[in-house]
Image (cartoon, rainbow, N blue to C red; front, side, top):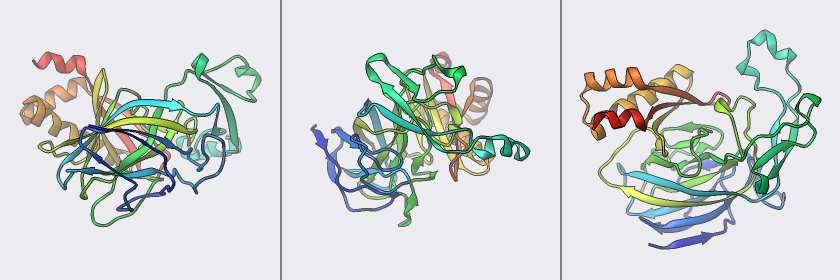
Length: 304
């Protein structure tokens, strides 16, 4: 098992069967850099066009159609002291009559202070003069090449993953993606220094980063939609519009997970999910919305 240090020279605005950037093996780890959502690097030098230029793809030897690619997110390191967002909220998260009362969506800037574990506005309104938020890094966009020869924009998401903007895909989490092409062709980018549920401002704290991750190929665990887990919970992601369709995909994937991995029949899985489910909105800004169906591991422990 090798540890690769990879410096990208090419970036992609679609997840597709692009030319391989690096070949890795099952069990390898990779440390690589990412650009911000507008394509600027750690020195704030423009490198690639938006939206969300991706590093990769990483060809994983042994990954075949029907397998699952597991990505263990080991470390997300901020590589610059500035991030940006858009001012105000996305227009479609408030009633149409209220849109005209929202501020103009100009780009605003934030100071990132890793040593103090804080992010603060550079020019805050008076009410937020002494306000800051902690750094809670996450990967906004990552996934594998889709099937059918498709090239899907990094602005959106689907069965292959993509721009899900789910805040629980952070350090210590594992993401699972259905493999649709030989080698899986894994991409990642669009790191946020912090973000609330739903990405309702249309961005997180957009910045560059260095990510260390481990790849694993699961041969006997096919999945249909992205899954994930962290220390406290397991979750499934549905990516679609309208929001209820995303919820349906996530719920159906969780029912399968409870049946195949936890031995629950359909009736038992339905009872268990109905009493324990938590729904998170990954994003309601992108072309496809993302909903996570989540179960706490403390609830799962009662099944043993």
